[in-house]
Image 1 (cartoon, one colour):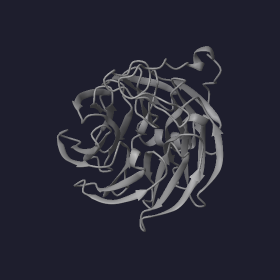
Image 2 (cartoon, rainbow, N blue to C red; image 1 turned 90 degrees about the vertical axis):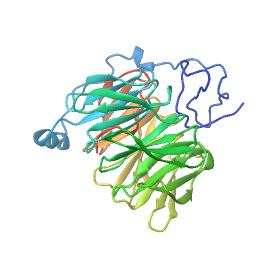
Image 3 (tube, helix red, strand yellow; image 1 turned 45 degrees about the horizontal axis):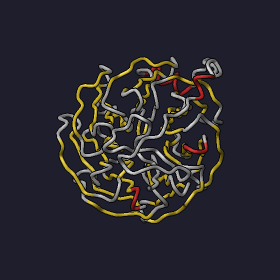
Image 4 (cartoon, helix red, strand yellow; image 1 turned 60 degrees about the vertical axis):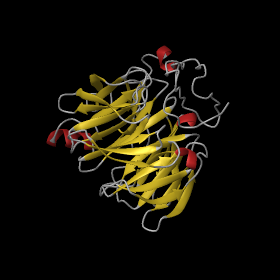
Length: 362
């Protein structure tokens, strides 16, 4: 028997040959091939009508709507083998796109006009055409695609191969693989620097984050972090790297210029996803086992607030003055006021939504 944290799959329908479960330090699971546990209880099934749907359109959303297309979010539904497309202004799912098996990670690229989705259930990546709102290809990608990131210029995307211990790079237009690089044990989340020059990978079982040259995937530096880093993201100004450690319940902040850790911030149980405020002064971290979001002040590196959210929050994104939080147990996305955490709406999506990565176009 062994336990693990931040694994990419769970539920009773995982493949028997390589079954994975999402766990925190409070959960114990079996090695691949063992009998699965029961499916989750969805509390919202008995709570219809609890959440109000009416909420005022935020100034940021109104401004974006007046100058361009409505803001959209793309939510991977691991239990439905699909991606839900959410129109945030209309508070509704406007499309459901079939992808590969048990999708988890997503990287939406406005520059590429595509969204890239990892499917751990069949070791593939699905490519979605944003204009057509359709998957145009599902292709092999290593032994266990989990984390995914797109280059800021839209020319490349990167896949973390959980079982293969490597990172793969692909041309976003031709979809041909251009590079691969061995990294540490159990690579999970990926994060690209805003200038597109660097790529960061969380090596979960090595308790470190590795820096790669984004063009060649050549290894550059390693940063020791807490226990079992899962998600990594670079601040909008490119100065700091945040690593979310699901076993030690904290977030490490690395100063990228000096390569040193400048803060270790205690958050809730099993931090999983991170998003930055529009002004870059705050980071929002989902805590799976605490049903909460920790709001981190990036000027003081302190937790400024903790907001209660739905059960098992995972993916998160900040869109102007709105915060989107994906709740795995509730099959829903909560829309919060990013200033104070007030619940504004809850939007039903597919089964077991994840939204791990960049679910709103950059």
